[in-house]
Length: 479
Image (tube, rainbow, N blue to C red; front, side, top):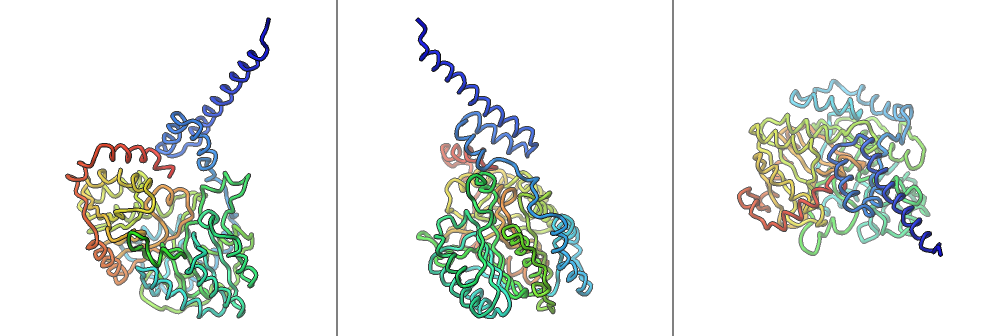
């Protein structure tokens, strides 16, 4: 007698196997045909082969490539860029530094980042000093405030800034707020509703909701931008949360942020308005957002952005060019070090050519997984002659680079795959000796609070630590 239950079970098992393995093989084919970076392609294939269920889920949420997607049309983009272009063309003849003219041209060609001179640059290395300066400038606002942060926490610091914004909105100042939806997942809606009720326009960037969840969760807006009346701006690595001011239970929070005053603020304004268009579909090009600005300092600066949907990887390409073009030294601070092959080779090349390349990381990070991955790359750069330091006073979240007493950059970009490939980022690139000397001294001061990593001792760390680092490194392009 035929047991139909057994047959049905066998058919179901075969059907499941066909669907299951078909999904895995089909996904691998899609990844291969996508023509990505081979390292990233291989990482996804390995995960799908050895952890198929986890791999499928992760690829569904984080892996699909939407790089070709255009969020803003070319015509609208060009219309907004005309404002910055007009200001750039109207400024007096801008003398580009000979050593960095090609880098500046690169950013203009790939990012339409215009170099503006006559800027005043102030550097903040503690959250408290940055917050005090930010609050002073917010109180001075008379026309508009544009504010964009990856994290806008509902804590003492977030509420303090929120209340100032509410007061300014009630006094007639235009206030617009952008926050990243994933960065603020734990912030209650009521926190932002109170701002809306006061007349503030508030949006989350690329809101993550099913079914669009899977296409957006991997593309985050990591930028930190404030623009006040189109004349004063802030950019850097600090978010609005208590830990950026008070530190963590095990140490201080060391970060770097900039206050800019001058025409370079037009670059921050353009970036904010482009991000605003993405969420509100309103393109704002009114002259009041791009006021005439007289020189306030001596620094030449460019505001450079990168995003996962563009044709180029502007910040990564620029940093690579700056590294191989350095003559005497190139100092780097970053909380996470998961470099793309481009950046890794550039660092090794510069060091092997005799440039004093120094890399500073936190001795203890806020994410153990990424820290393990970061450590896996240190032998590669140490062997090339790069000097590596672990900051031991607390958590180093600073994204600062300085070179040859002429060039420096501060922004939201980490030296990792996520910043270079997946995030919306922004950096101020500054070509000014006075600023570079300040940045250099900041690095050297932090170096005094650090311990140097030596190759001969680094290679002797326990085998199980090396194994853990190597395993995480396989996932580095996906972290």
